[in-house]
Length: 155
Image (cartoon, rainbow, N blue to C red; front, side, top):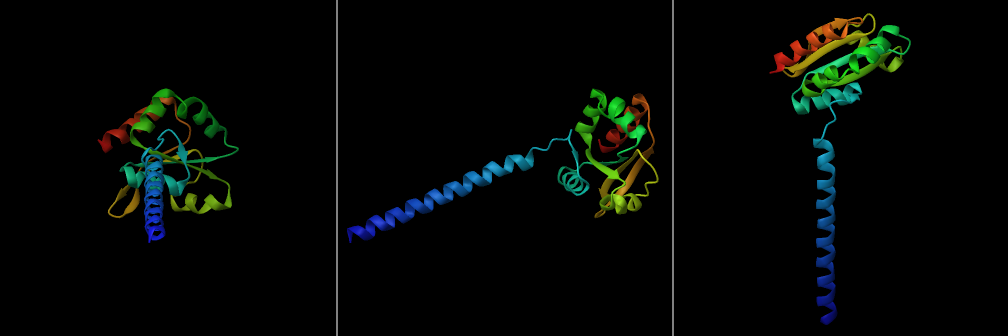
């Protein structure tokens, strides 16, 4: 009889320990999902998920590896603190490198004919639709104006 009581107590303790471990694991995972780094540039699918989750427009940045204008935008415009601050406050950025077979369909889907191209999309009526678009390399102040207008529309 005493053996049964010890076994039952042991099993209850094991169950409690397992339940505690599961709860700890669940809570350890949740903050990672809730904390999104909006300064980061995400792959297309992940950016759409985050935009939907956080109710933000997604900035699709179409670039190519050998594009001097893309490099110019990345060096002098997109890395500027004012631009990063605006992007962090109101968008999720998807970086899409064209010239690869995996991204060619995205370029066609969003009607991209050259790089750099920036397409702001919003989730409306159950689908992502284009809100605004900019093609080519822009001076920092013009890109800030463009980005600010998108952010104002989001409220």
